[in-house]
Image (cartoon, rainbow, N blue to C red; front, side, top):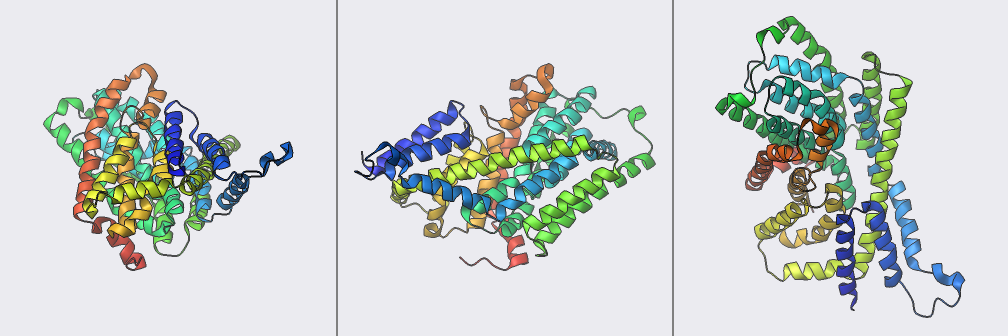
Length: 455
């Protein structure tokens, strides 16, 4: 075998192993070290048993681990995670959902609208899809079920709204993307604001139109269940304003250039603790659980990076990136054809794989080709970020559906969740098409805050 053939074999085995259910991070490590041992093996260097570890792959693994640990961009991940977990446990979100549904009670599908707005706000404070879907599944779905909402409709609202966390800043996914593509996380955050809000707004418009056409799927609340208006306003004031103020402070400091993502995340984590104290939710158990979940999620991300950088280094050394780049460029594609091809590939990969696997393994294959086609890397990043929404919504992996099924159990069938999700897939694709036609949706804000991007 030639080395490029070994690289393709390496990639193929990795995909099979992931589909079989092996942990992604450790599969990446195992494949990287195994094939790296072959790639860096020097004939005649192994003369005695003690020389088995005399191979450059172990030095590469050590260096990659050290590089991940000292990466300043990745410091923001545990801090944003901690902020999200603290806010989740401060009982702010349930009060916000209740206040919003009462405020929107005269609109078609008021509970669904309240759930989507709550998901959007909570996503900006969390960036954790699993946490948003799980919490809203426990909070919003039972409320909608009691109000006789159609189950598949309610499930689709929660699953789609919960995925906004990987797009709307402070998205963990954008921090990971910035580290992989060596882009500015500040620009990525600015680029994601308008697409994220447009996508959330499109979901709300869809809910209003669909309920207007078919009111039976989302009955209006009974008048006797609606509290006095002053109570609603007080609930909004005490839930929406503090959380929104914290979010605006964090994102504003980043976009205004007053703080790095890590510094803003530290401020957000501290602000989350303050809110928990103000709401009387702060205690040792809550703090311990938030720290534990933060450490657990951060460890997963760090090992993913160590494994992916090792895997990618060996894959590139064997000529894998080169053979794929040569293959793609051989088609003499126009820029729009290249973009469509890549997005179709990412969309299809979203069926069996999660966003982390797609982002860490497959996106770097296409990044070196962007200058050849004259594509702005931040515009490309936003197309990918929108597309990765589908990795949570497309069966059979559709992780948001499994998160919801996990907390609801027998209250709903998985097939009903998938049925409710489908319209939102079409909305995501529509917003991608809209952004392709009007690239300034993604580029205006970063250009405004940080100046025009120059490659």
